[in-house]
Figure (cartoon, rainbow, N blue to C red):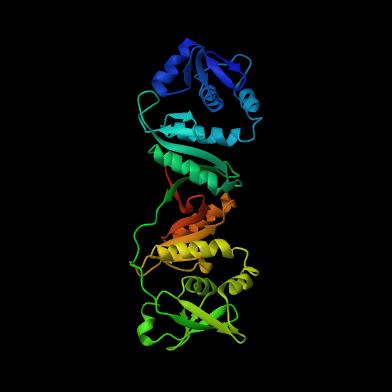
Length: 335
């Protein structure tokens, strides 16, 4: 079946309609079937079309002037060889359920293609994932590494599942020791404070900076140093001068607490928080706070997901968005 190069596309005559009807290739137009670059190269490689003046290497080089073309082709080929019908857009690819095709079937995945070195813009990720969800499609990242191997991640922007009931905390007073505070809860106060602090002994708890700021801002804790009572915002400024991630960590910590979760440091997992729902004895999630406008390397996200799965936890990135904090889950999948 002969085709011709037409600028950024390849076109077939009316005889090309059979490729669309049988296998979902291309988009029918008045001038014939229009093939996207990935489709044309795949069909040429499979010897299902001919383009006078171009063999596969020449056509590949022609479209390969765009740096993202190689990785897009590799993903397209992989999806086709897994038995899926694939069309371009509205992300990079729209992937149909196995055995279904454009015109008569339903798409299942919206796929965005990235390289392992790309930076993930969480604002864009949230918009695209939400759009896919509204269309009742799964949003998938297809990552092409430096050796041209592929990894697929399903992305979800989700509400947090139900957690433990909120606990009424007693008024507390503390003494600052550096960036920590020591409090002396009574035996009766120990139970509602079970998710806060580290026990120094039977009489004392040591609170972390985030716990201090959260409890102070909710009106539960007042604290002193040798010079007298400390204003919470003064303490915040002191800690923030040594921690440039403090603002986003405190926002996420506060939100998790408000939703009934118990965030504790996730340092040993390489993340901001390990998070308990209170419904199970162990933490169920790792959460990393992402400030508005931040872009995170895909290689960092990949390591995070691998670690979280190895310790049987969900990996969530808590990103500040226009409608508040959004929890973005990355999970490796096999298509």
